[in-house]
Image 1 (cartoon, rainbow, N blue to C red):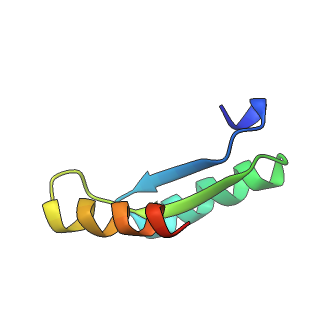
Image 2: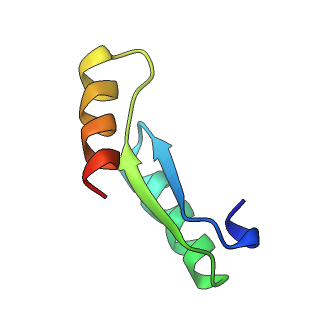
Amino acid sequence: MAFKGFKVILASRNPKRGHEATQKLNDSKLDVSFVVMDVDDQESIRQAANTVNER
């Protein structure tokens, strides 16, 4: 959806890989940001949701 002008939030449990992927997409002029989230961890999901709501 980023290529259609939407802001996209990429989530990954691996911060290094998430930031690398986000940077590649930003280099392509796409509006993508990153948040750490592990779908197997409820607290991680809660923290990611808080971060998204703040943005």
